[in-house]
Image (cartoon, rainbow, N blue to C red; front, side):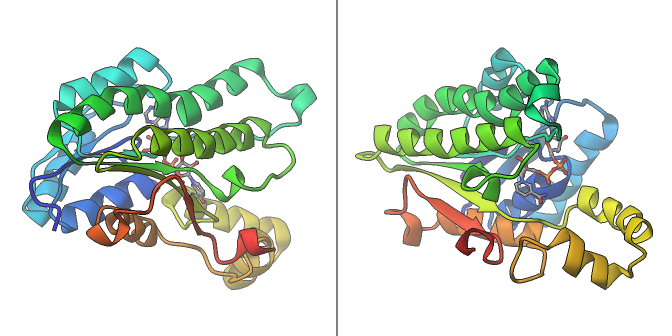
Length: 256
Ligand code: NAD
């Protein structure tokens, strides 16, 4: 059980981050949800999760594109035993047409935020005598696709930064690893299915198998619950010596 531990999950008002927060709460951790918005529904979501699992839960708004705000998120939480760096965005365009501001935003949110939150959290983990840094990278942290230059560069960067964090904490009860999901069924992905069905004139199952999961040999999406379960595993004593590595949850994508 993770009771007594506080977990901060960046970008967690939807998708994978929310799924990870839910599994950590189920395992007994107090949770801090985050995104850049500050709506009533964001705070209500945290309250609902906390009540459902009998843990303390808070929502703290902070824009992960802003390094000072990243550090402020950790400082405002006041405690960080488990840091899950999950916030991320994508932009698809050829390198010669890639908008510079999109490049900067992808690198800031997907990579630099991990540097800032980790820098702010490590002293808290050292003071508490235990810590876990878990970075949600991607199959695109290990392989590439055309037209995703910023995303692939940032995710490879996250994998590299995870290794350095692991080496700097290797002799302490702190570990750092990167999880590399393939295609995960999130609300965002779910919303693309009807369009893809229309575009290709295929039914739901065929468009998922033949179009969306073309690179995922299992031909099945990973689920946010599976990502969350892996995060909980990395927080368990069985994972004490797992550090500086990647765990792929990609139905065989990176075996190809
Ligand atoms: P999503 O868009 O559903 O969630 C992204 C989260 O980040 C949201 O909560 C969003 O509010 C938040 N966010 C975006 N910009 C932010 C900012 N500037 N500051 C703070 N929060 C911000 O996407 P997702 O699919 O759940 O992705 C989560 C992570 O998993 C990302 O890092 C993504 O690259 C990675 N990932 C996703 C997949 C997939 O198939 N869905 C596969 C591999 C890796």
